[in-house]
Length: 244
Image 1 (cartoon, rainbow, N blue to C red):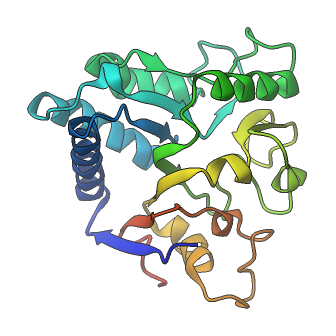
Image 2 (image 1 turned 120 degrees about the vertical axis):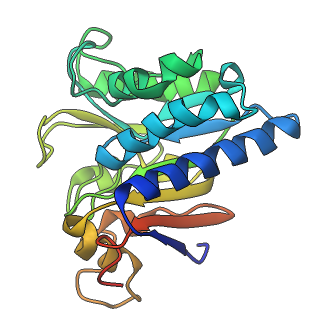
């Protein structure tokens, strides 16, 4: 596992701008080197703020979003037009505005018979069109320490030999979700955790705590189970970083 880097900004707005600027810089460098970047997106309040900053900052960048492959770490298994969908929120905030064309959404209830079939279908999509991993994977962390839709103590934590897993009893509504597995999340060169607000402070503390700290296991705090191959960075505002 890579040693986590920690970047703290004073407030959510500054944090979102910093993350968006750094992502655009990384993508431009990858494209300059002849790579078509693969990016994993997350949902949540701070992610939405980052997405809106990407829309604002992209015109001044050199990034060609038609040559960026977009994936999702998890998704709510609901109707395609539901406002709960991470993909819909990302499209509204920036993907459509920047002209992204390689957007690989997780299945909705219109696309698959059930959440498990949806997970299998997304795994097949990754195998057919994925590059083998993520250049940059952005993830949130819940107040309970969950990452993607891998929740503390949930059977999905133990999924193996699968890219995605169906979740039928999420403790956070809606109850049905599709999530990448730990094995799939582990195929990221760079992992960025995004966290804002005091409600995330204890989860951040547990995720970054030394081994043996009470509550600091993958079962208790699933975010501990994900790190980048070459880089893991935690982007935090001061309230989220207040306990580390």
